[in-house]
Image (cartoon, rainbow over all chains, first blue to last red; front, side):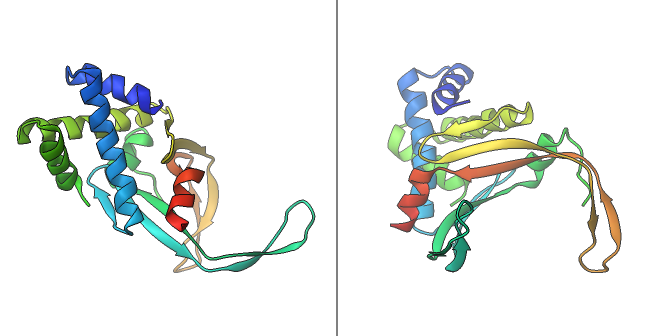
Length: 97
Length: 91
């Protein structure tokens, strides 16, 4: 499912005009990116949470040549799946760990 | 940021009632959840992909006690952020 499919599914489900549905989807997703850019944490109950994690620099290896390369510090978005969705995806079962 | 902030945004910027805004935002997440539950991936360009992965059963360890335990096969949801988004975060 791409963004355009999400928009049509939303417009169908909520009887919205295509433009309205696309404005809503863009507002939700744009809100996500903006919040994370501000290093803000996002928490959607039943879905999951997004945080920005900072990774320190390390000495990596080029997997093809084996050459050492410096990998600088970086920030990556991290998604932690929420409990409800985690169980839904796993067929409603609680995965034992 | 929580769902309430998103609902507020939809209410203020798009002119839906509070009640409609809440229901519609809920629907957005419901659609995404339903799709992932049926095993379909969600690809949002400029943001990232949500993919359901099948994990085989394996033997693990309880990190606290060191006891070996069986970990059953399962489906897990993973998120991979898009390159565009990662670049924006690091700029």
